[in-house]
Image (cartoon, rainbow, N blue to C red; front, top):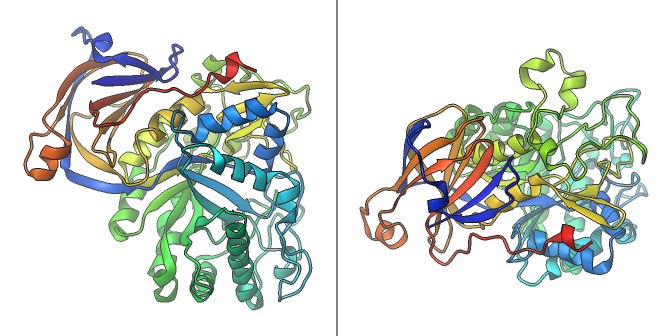
Length: 515
């Protein structure tokens, strides 16, 4: 049996034998029983996002270094990311606003992916796909329809604090625009696996590209989009909603319950920005109970709003996180809510970015998430480029020729390597201890990995056990195994109870030692 450790003390996907984690009897002890006979949800993958900003950040690297970054993310010796999200048209993480059909022509005669060709996004997606052994699925999301299809004729409107709404007469036009995008992407060798109708239908107060939709509007549009995809013989799944978990039951539930929309909707997309520390377990479980055959995919989460309002955002702005792993493990980050939300202490207190990633990955998968996608695989040192100043952090940061692989990447990679598409989350019974999060995942080859995230400041001793065999399947994939170990404080620990053919170790290139 092996273990893999990423921690505040400097471990970065460190592979170690269980004997190195022997319990001493001096720490709190919990017993956990993994039940392969009680599968929960299927996992459709873990990954990150490729955007125009990511393409711009990587453009400054030497060719071999850029290749190593992509190998670290998508190669079999790296994170093995199996989901990639990308925008349809521009978003805040573009260098300018643009659409793929700039002329008000319902026939979409001028539709073109040339803007994504010029900004390097198509090359980036193709280069990621070309990494030997890479195997990922693309989720595509529009932040807005082309302005001429909207009631305000704009990408976004800061003064009016709105993004605008899709005109009813352009539901079919926008559906054809989205279908055309899928067709053109396929011609580029980039098949789209899933779509969301629009990113964040509640809007963003017109701060950058957006388009508001009420549940009824989205239901009507999803029905139109579904019929359009079907008529053109296109296969992308439709993930409804695409905003924060707190509102998923009301919004996504209404769309999925609509007879016409529900026929075409495959699942629900969610984000994490309602809180810097909540996982919203009850909301996830409740939504799954109402729609058990509709997967829930986390399509966006990042360390956002890294500069306070009014702070400098130029090349000389302070970047305390640069090459400072310890920063990611301390409660030094604040999000949008710290600056703008009423009572920010309640849901948006300062937080440790590494804690937030590990807690959300482990807690979210334990509570019905069927996939998890980070926002922006790579950005510049200051969290850009971003054409509206909404700077955020990414798992990998670059500054000129330098590459900094942050702890966020190691946390994502450690989970991703155990959860390829087709994996299954297993029930885990046992003692509950505040601050200790756990999830068990069985990969398609039969390997069982248990992820333990200890967010406390003390070690926790854990007795792990796989249930005795009760039928042929369990005997084949999960013979009885036991392990006793001490999970270090402020750490994500992965224990392989049943190794099968999986290699739990990290072998991706050491980017930082070879700039």
